[in-house]
Image (cartoon, rainbow, N blue to C red):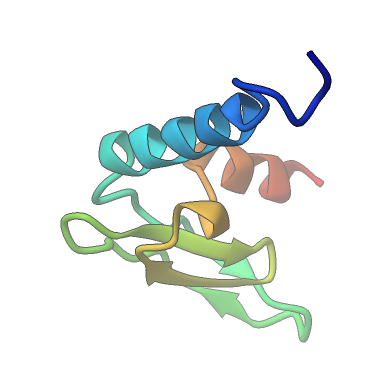
Length: 81
């Protein structure tokens, strides 16, 4: 069968499942300190339960959208570069 046959939506479903599982594990993820694009330092802060750190290297906030998740590992990578 071709790409539109049975099971053709599985990669998308698998990706969604991983995103949801990540959000459940990362609930309460902390936002580490960061420096914004203007060079201003911002202290780290905790996100509430079932929310996690989202954003970019230069702007961080708490959210519930797993597609915007910024893990602590990614945040530390921002600090290194």
